[in-house]
Length: 244
Image (tube, rainbow, N blue to C red; front, side, top):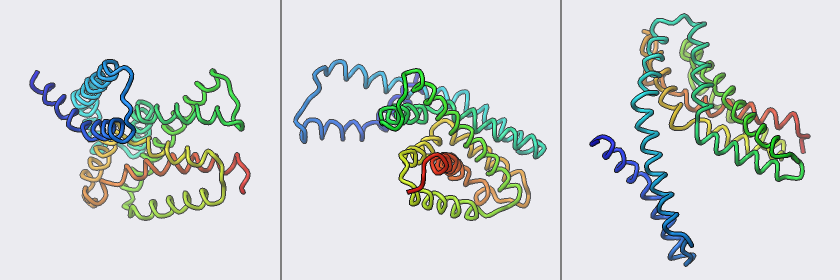
């Protein structure tokens, strides 16, 4: 019970700044208090317990398994299998991302509410799924690219600068509403579940290669993982919406 209690305290400590900010502005600036304080308190307790159990569960199960698989594949895997494992790891861990699910649902709702995107509730649910799986596919490709970069010894800057340059160019050439959605989806794709797995894969692979440095070559997976879904969705916006 002690580890769980410590985890609860750590989660409460992490939540304290945002709770204090909300309380400060709600009470002192706006001067409005919630109509159902007990319900609000129950919801906050549920969030605290839920986040604690999520993080604790990940630490006990998913992270050790993912790190062990990543290390084994990096040390003994053939490049073809390694690339396939990287794609599967990126795709599977991203589909499970709570942050991505939230952003995809909000983006789908906003797009459907726009007159340019009329849709039914069924189509809204389908659009949410399409956004999530589209981002997950892009992140799977990103991990493949990250693995290939480590194998070839490419400097990270070769990928980062052109990637952000393309993002800036596409955003400047089109005012499509999908552009802002693409940027948020790309950022939400990397969060609590898949970042440790990406780091384990990158560092494990770089450490297993004599000509690579774990600190220099092992990191960089996360920025590539954020860039690739953005580029895919920006390309879709550029193709589907006229430039102007």
